[in-house]
Length: 309
Image (cartoon, rainbow, N blue to C red; front, side, top):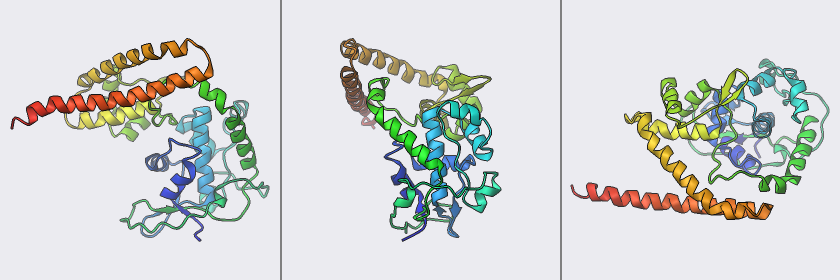
């Protein structure tokens, strides 16, 4: 039995609680300095219980409080920064350090208070033996039997309360077919890094209405939909396609969204939770069918030209 988890095992551990989390997102959080897992000599990441607790706390702050990464990083570095506002919003203080590495990063040392909860200590997956070059991901996480710190009990209670209201939240869920990585909140510079496009290209995408940020005070932040749009647009931009040419996809999406809204309007007018869930299911089903239909029609149209050669 290992005392750490690989990045793949961490992903499996967290996906039930955070369905949108991906290996890429975990790597991105590391690149931004929010987590710092230990590495093996061959370059594999090793996630211990403290690393998983820290990662879980970060994901909760993004999902429940929509905090930008800069704010989360500040609070990890200085737990007292913005503490009053966070608690008023129903948030939890950041996890305290349990290792010399965390202490060196400026995180307060761990206390001796602990309450047994269903944390990563209960998980005992097999070690990862996948070969990888130096610097590649492989990773491990903590099977330590030490009880978790006291703050985890509060986090567990908050999670339980959130699950208790899941039915009401589901009823109020906005219509969208694929939520994508919505648990992110990025600055303009962070979005450029995460999507691998230049700042000039991002401004061009904004100019043509392909993505838009959300103002918060003097800053502007971008959600997971903006990240997904920028990431997909990057492939076109890398091949010389300009942002103005991509506007046709936005126009087509707006027309399709209007069509689907008309189809679901009879359900939405019933104004009850079950009807709203039925409307969401209908949109998801028709969106999937629409994607397949567009693919088939696109293939048929292109084949006329490609088969001529």
